[in-house]
Amino acid sequence: QLHKYMHCEKNLSGLTDYLVNSNVKWKKNIIKPFNNQSLDVLLSGPLPPNPLNLINNGNIELLIKEARKLYDYIIIDTAPTLLVADTKSLFNKSDIILFLVRCQITDKDIVKYISNISKENNNIGIILNGVGERNSYGYSYNYKYSYNYGYGYGYSASDD
Image (cartoon, rainbow, N blue to C red; front, side, top):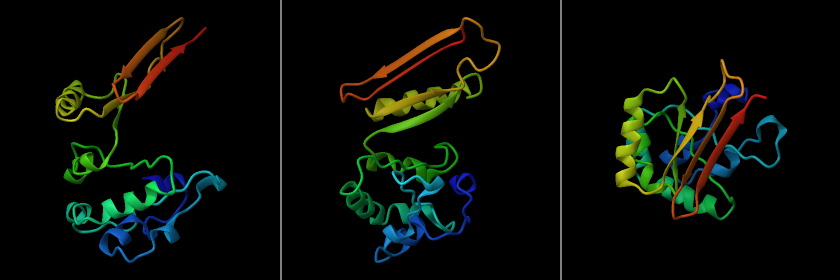
């Protein structure tokens, strides 16, 4: 859905083109959204008929290895884990996996699912979104997650 926010065509060349053929120059498909010179985005490109096969063909590892030489941070925005199998296949290719959950919206069973995944992977984090948005006055909430790799998350909101 990122292409909508960046006002780009959905079928622009992108990651899919490289996954199909590693000879494609993925850097040529980088866009700079919102005239932000410090943010590079590689959109997904056309929807392939077999995304799981493409993610597991070895080309994504080549791209990540090459991109690590150029970038401090590489963020892979994926479909929700429970909806498509290809998202979970990226777990072992990532340094950290962050789940975005919305306060009062995300089903508690999904949080249990994340908890179960964290037993298999020690690089799981949760971003809690939408805390204190409505009906709050003098409300304060603090959440902190940390692990021995030094990743951390904290949130504090209050309406004064």
